Amino acid sequence: MLSGILKKEECAACRFCCSFKKTSLWETPVFTKENIDAIKKDESLKSDSLNESENGGLIFATYDLSGLYKTCDPNEEIPCPFLSETGCLLNDEQKPIDCKIWPVRIMRKDSKTVLALSPSCPVCNISDMDKIKKYVDETIRKDITEYAKDHPYLIKEFRSEYTII
Image 1 (cartoon, rainbow, N blue to C red):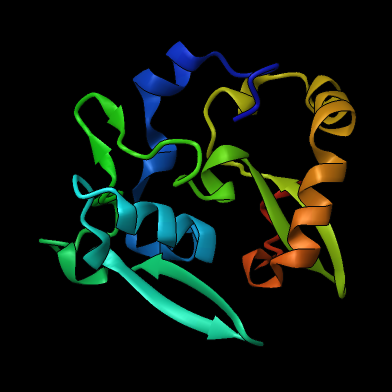
Image 2 (image 1 turned 180 degrees about the horizontal axis):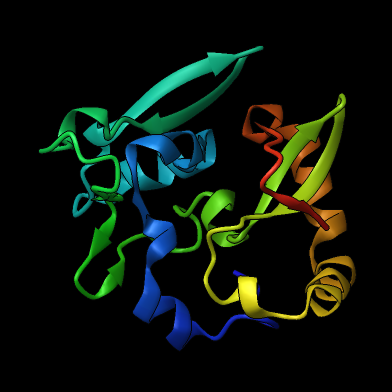
């Protein structure tokens, strides 16, 4: 979360980033092996919702919400399996980077890794883009970029509606 830009209260009230329309399933978070192991250690969490995969010897997981939609309405949203009435059930060790850095996304554009801002965050859409870019540059850009080098499966393909920051 962009704690220098977004307030926890705003995010807790919105939760937009924790539910997915059919058209945004590509945005579901990717869990690293470390996240998966931490989740599996917690008996209160249902790790069976995670679909593990391997890419170049690196293990990661996502969850598949596609079978949970009850209607054909493209605007129907399904919440993350780790979202409760009181908020996210995951602790920092269990939470994927996609969730930690929301609404920033690690993306690939023209074979380069870029950081981009999701157009769907209601607060960031009305925020000062220069302030967001400055915050990202000063606090998280270097760490996120390094993390992506070690976990290349986290990088999503760039979409034109996203703003590179």
